[in-house]
Structures are given as C-alpha cells and as structure tokens.
Length: 345
Image: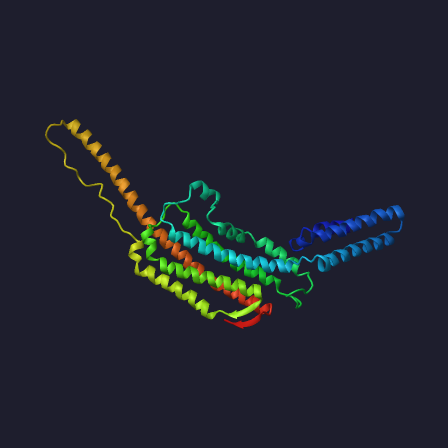
C-alpha cells in the first residue's frame, strides 16, 4: 500500500513528469507481484519473470531504434533548430519587402488580419510556429540526453540543453518579426513616398540581419565555429545608418498641426433677421463649423499617426538587430560546449 501510494504521488512531481511512463510500469509491476503473490504464494518468482519480460522488451526496443530503424531525437532537434533560423530570416525579409513595396492598394482585409490568414506570406506561418516550438525542443532535448553517441554527435555528455537556450534566444528575435508583421497589417499606414525615403537603409539592415541569421543556422547545421566579427560589424553599421537617417529626417516623422480656436467670435448678421432667428442661425453655423473642425482635426491627427507608424516599424527593426547579439552569443556558447570545428570567415 505504501509503495503504491509513493509511486503514484512521485509521478506528479514536476521534475519526474517526463518519466511518468516509467512510474506507471513500476506501479503495474508492483500490483502484479502483489496479486500473484496472494494467488501462487511465490512473489519472488513472479517478480523475476516480470523483470525478464521488461528486459526483453527493452532490448528489442533499443535494437530496433538503434540498428534497424534508427530515429534519433538529437538529429531531429538539430534539424528543427536550423529550420527555425531559416524561417525567421525568410519571414523578416518577406515582411520588410512587402512593407516597402506596398503602396496601400492591396491592404489586407480585416477578416484576414483577425484570422492571421495571409496567403501571399508563406513564411509568416513558419515564423509563428517558431514561437510555439519551446515544448517541442525541450522534449527532444530530454529524449536526446538518453541516446548513446551516434552520427555527428559522438562525444559523451553532448550539450543538448544548449540547443534549448539557443531556441529561446531565437524566439526572442522572432517576437520582433511578428511585431513587424503587426505594423505591416495595421489599419494606419505610412505614405508610400515617406517609406521610399528610408527604403535603402531599411533594405540594407534587413538583408544584413537575415544574412547573419542564415550564417548562424548554417554553422549549427555544419557544426562549425566560424569567426563572424566582420558580418556582425556590418549588421551594426547598417543599423546605425538607419538610425542616422531617421534622425536626419525626424521632422518628417513628427508632423505638427494647430487645433483651430473654437472660442473665436463669429459676427452676427444685423439686418433682416429677428433676435430669435439670429440666435438659431448662429447655433446652426456653430454646429457646422464644429463638425468641420472635428473632421479636420481627425484627418490631420491620422496623418501624423501614419507618419509615426513608419518610426515604429524602423524602431522594431533596430530592436531586432540589437537582439541578434544575444543570439550570436548563445550560438557561440553552443559551439564551444559542443566542440564545433573552428573555421575562419
């Protein structure tokens, strides 16, 4: 009774949740031995036979999974992480290219925006799936720790947990890409001629950042440790040029306007109207003027907000470049722990 209770509650402990199947086997074996002990009176023999059957099943499973039809969790984890790098890089370029080429004529419908359905953006869903890959990477890393050295992962105690950390840093960058998609599909858009002013700087920063991400993914796939200091400096330089361009043309992103004075007096007509008619006419003109002023203020404020949406887009892109430093550091730590081959770039 005590053994069954302890086993049942131990499998609920967060640390032991991944090994729940093993606790179930232990509990089932214990119950089988107890029941057979009452019926046959020889629980030791029953337990030995049960251990034999477990050992035979384990040997068959290991032989099939390692010799006949091997499916390595470590290999899947390796490929999954590399695919995520390419997905984020492709989604970044896809989003920025569409933002710079869109003149506002093919704005997405509200229904598509709410449902996240963008048929002309195939990389969007791949980037979104990267955000939900945390549980999958952790599960694969946990399974890979129990695998023997194989293939390209030959040394003992391979740092599978570092793959999870790199995946977390990659998701940290993917959040910015999704934010860029949010600006792309927002209702208020910057004018096309305003976006064209910063097109060169935005395209250069995007291209350099995507190139760095693909380079990091290729290093992980090839299991090589390259020196990317030149490429990193190039990414930072393109980001700085974009910042300087924004500072130079800051006046275009902060349109100012003056609210008309509603308290200004309007001369009243004197001849041809009684006092009551004059008052009614004055109220009517006041209401019409108020409606016109409200529409004018709303139109000007929307124009100012539209200009600021471009500032939001560029600031998100600069933030993405800043987050790449954490990703480069995580990949560098993985390459050292996994003993990747050194190669100069």
